[in-house]
Image 1 (cartoon, one colour):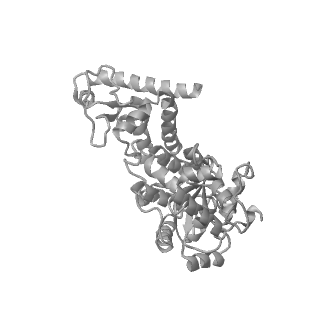
Image 2 (cartoon, one colour):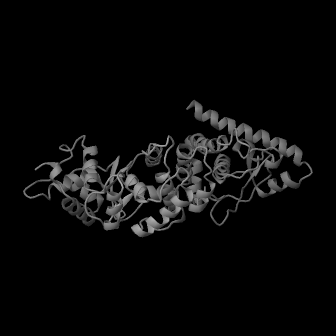
Image 3 (cartoon, one colour):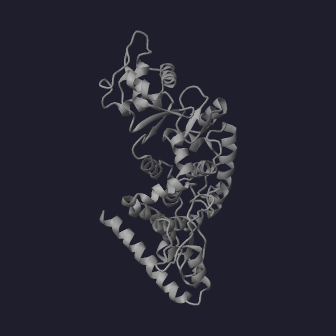
Length: 404
C-alpha cells in the first residue's frame, strides 16, 4: 500500500496514540523530530503532521509505520495528504508563524472580475479577528457564522458583494485560514453557486480560525495590527473602512493592547537587538495609515485608531519603560494594574496646531514631566527639547534598522 491509501480513520488512530503517549514519547517511538513548518490542527490540538502520517501508515492492514527517511523531503506531501483528507494544516509551526500568517493574508486569492479585489474573504477575516481579540469562542456553528458574515456583507459589501458567507469560508478553508469540522466528505471549492450553498446547508459544519492564527491575533498586538494593516492596504484602498472595523470591534484606541504582564514587558524591552526592528514595524503601520489620506481633503486631526494605536505602541516600545524627558528628575517606580510603567504618551505639538499623529513627534513622559510640559512656566522651552528628542530617537532607531 502507498501513503495515498491512508484515510481519515488511520490519521485519527495516530492522533489518538499521540494524545495517549504525549508528544515527546510519540515522536521518540516513531523516530521523528518536532515539526518546523507543518502542524496538523484538530479539535483545538496541534500534531506534528509528518509524524502523524508516518504513524498512520502503520494502522493500514498489514503495513508498518513509515520512517522519517521514507518521508524525507515529504513534509509538503504529508501536509497535502492531510488537507485532501479535509484536515486543517498550519504553516509556520515552529519558526516564523507571524511572518507566515502575514504572507498568506497578503497573497489571498480573491475574485477580481470587476477590476478590484472582492471583499468576501477580507470581511470574514476581520470579523474573526475581532472575535479573537475579545477572546470569544474560536469555533462557531455554521448558522451563527452565516448570520454574522451575511449581515456584514450586506452592510459593508462596498464592491457589490452578495450576502453569501459560503464563498469566503470555503475559500479561506482551502487557503489554510479557516477550520471546518463536523462534516463528511471534502469541502467544495469556492466556485459555482447552488452546489456550494447546498453543501453548507446539508453539512452545517462548525468552524473558525485555526488555533495558531487565533492565538496570534488574540495575544500579539503586533500581529493583530499588522494583519489589519495588510488587509486594509491590499484590499480596501480608496474605501472607507472605518464603519466595518468599528462593527467588528477593531477600531478603537485600545486595539494595540496585548495584556503583557510586567515580566513579559521587561523581557520584550531587554531584547535590544530587536528594538530597532520592532520599532520599524510599528512605524510602518503608522506610515501606511498616514499615507492613505494623501491627496484627500481630510481634517488634520482625523482620528484613525489603527494609526494612533500603532504610534502609541511604537513610542512606548522606544522608551523602554523610561521617561523620555532628558531632564527628568525621577519617575514613579510603581506600575499600573496591568503591570505597565506609569508613562503617558504625548503629542509634543498638538494635532490641532499642525502636529502629526506620528512617533517622530510623540514622547513617553512620566506624570510629572507631562504636567510640566502642559502647564509649567517653561513649557515652550521643554516642548522644543522634547520635539528634538522625539525626532532624534525616531531617526536613530529607523537608521539602525536600515543598516542591519
